Image (cartoon, rainbow, N blue to C red; front, top):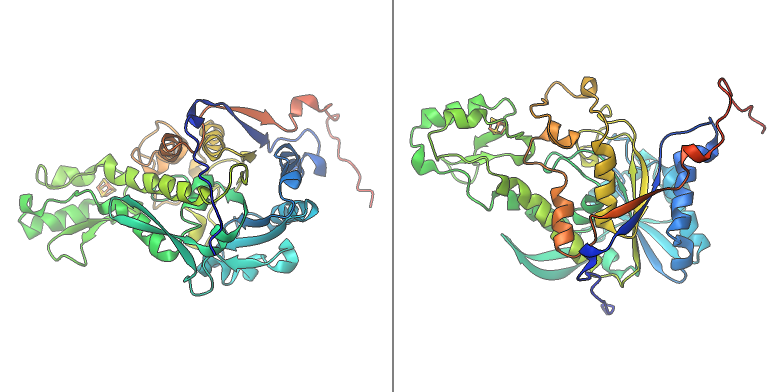
Length: 404
Ligand code: SF4
């Protein structure tokens, strides 16, 4: 029987100031207690995770990666969270989408390494789910993974990186896509096409359509497979450079923010559905911002990092968490020499992930939509759990001898 739920979406949350705990990648000494796994422990203490999970069935939502990717959260971090949950008297299990759980042992995730079972969120056939009716554009009903909804506590442990649809994948993305079954994930990507952007009646000449396709350096415009004569825009590949608009007859093609923003609004709605199935205080969020690649971990490979490591973040407020990750990473310098030659930087305004994926893939939109839904506050205090300024500096040249 479906358990009783209360809505965690609190009106007025937007006006509160939240706390985000932060572990910097900076060290004063080459010692383990200044590294990120040790700072994760400090963050979990601040979040009082052990005290909150007694008797709870805890879903630890993370991405177990795909194929030969190696930039998802290392088992060293995962094991520490699992151990903390067990020490607090909770019953943890890791959950992810079916096609990523399958084969996750090849990327280092096994019950032996992480310390708990690893399950597909809707069962091995992706058929165990709960429907949630919430009309948004072409989506009427959202299908939430059964094991997510059956859990009584949620630890949302995400990895920050780039994303081709919205430029950033972090805390929201881990829940938004990662808690819904495949049918809903596909529908969420498709909402980008709900607002019309191609008007074939204004471009009747097939030769001009060929020119429009040919001018795009990212092969983002193709023939629509379902509708011959129509064009289809691959949102993921488009960086909004505008070259196609120079060729298309006036009014026949729109490169419009609404198509790009839809995905992020869908992500915020999806996340709100997932969080609404947990009682107030029964969800917390941790994000590891290291090895940040241009596209998400679903791609099945790890490319060079495009931003320096930013650290680890934790908060009960998901909006504040992603806002803080974006603010901290937004001050970093894009490592342009690490960007694949198939991508181009054509704007230098705003967050560096926007430079890479285009101005309409503004990574802040998801927190904007999330805050509007009452999921949290964009206003926060960033609390460094081990500020380097408070550590007595070691003398230059100091390397502690290993004692065991
Ligand atoms: S805006 Fe640029 S990247 Fe996007 S479809 Fe047009 S030419 Fe391609």
